[in-house]
Each structure stands twice: as structure tokens, then as C-alpha cells.
Length: 135
Image (cartoon, rainbow, N blue to C red; front, side, top):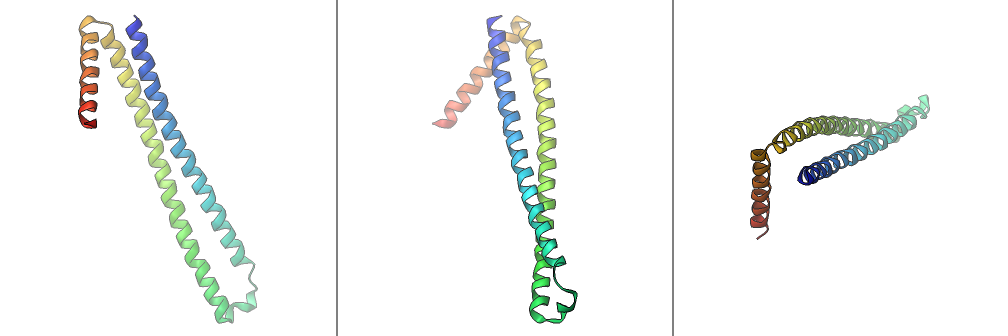
């Protein structure tokens, strides 16, 4: 029974670490999206505050074309960040489903003597593999 609680604690730690890493990535992506949105909004405001009669000046035309290019760049960056955020959210959902499935299998295996022996074997095998990689 003590081993079962150790296994439960280990799987809980792994799941907490995975959730935390995905959550931190999602928060960073959201911050980046909000930053790009603010910059894009500022560029729109600059473009809207220009006087209608001043479009004929070459300097203003250059400035407006620069703003248009910046808008496109910001829009594409914003789209890319939103797409990446959706990808992270789907990966998070997959991780949670895999984790719940693995936890269920682990509990099912740990209820039998053969299952507990298999779990010990897999953990020992994983430790050996990581120690070999370090060397």
C-alpha cells in the first residue's frame, strides 16, 4: 500500500509539472498576443490621426506605407502567436488525457502482484536508460 501511495505521488508530481509548464507557456503566449495587439492598435491610431489633406506629401505617403507594412507584420505575428497558443492548448488537453489514461492503467496494474512487479521493472529500466545516457 505504501508503494501505491509513492507511485501516486510520483505521477501527481509529473502531472503537476506538465500542467505548470504548459500553463506558463500559454501565459507567455497570451502576453505576447496582448502586446502585439496593443502595438497594432497604436499603429492604427497613428494612421487615423493623420490629416486628410496631407496625403499628397511624399513623406506622409512613405509614413503611411510604412504603417501599412507594420500592420501586416503585426497581424501576421499576432496570427502566428494565436495559432501557437491553440497548439499549446491542444497539447495540454492531450497531455491531460494521456495522463489520466496512464494513471488509470497504473492503478489497475498496481492492484495485482504481477502488475506491481512490471511497474518496478519499467522504473528500473528507465533509471538504467537515463544513467546510460548521462555517461
